[in-house]
Image (cartoon, rainbow, N blue to C red; front, side, top):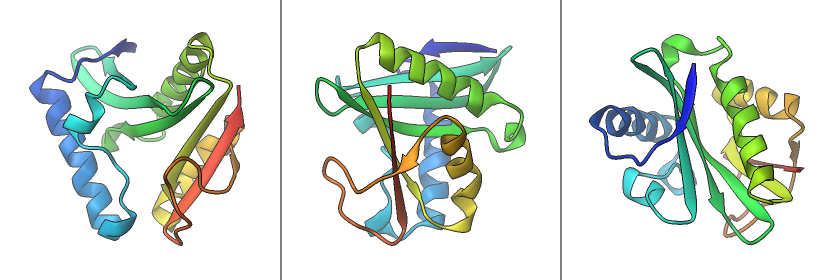
Length: 151
């Protein structure tokens, strides 16, 4: 598998992210949906990676700079047919290493609180993330789980 910074200009990643946003909208009330659309992911504060296996796009993830020492994990997604195959672990390990290289000292995230998101929460816990209070512009939300870890 290959992980590479993606400029988000290709049609395949656009479709992949649209599927992600649609899935999040189907699972989460609109006021609790925090998945970023393509234009939002193109902002300078965001570094976005895609994961390919041969010619197939199998996953993606990003970090958003919140301040000099704090970044947020965004847009983690694995192609449904490839879930639980190691794609997310490989990518999360890569993103944590890149966040350290970028000199961030903390990495935080927001994910869903529903049962559907339990595998994601377990993955984050496996990588040292622990539940925390809302951060950045987030507010308490029964549909959200906030997690953080020191780097």
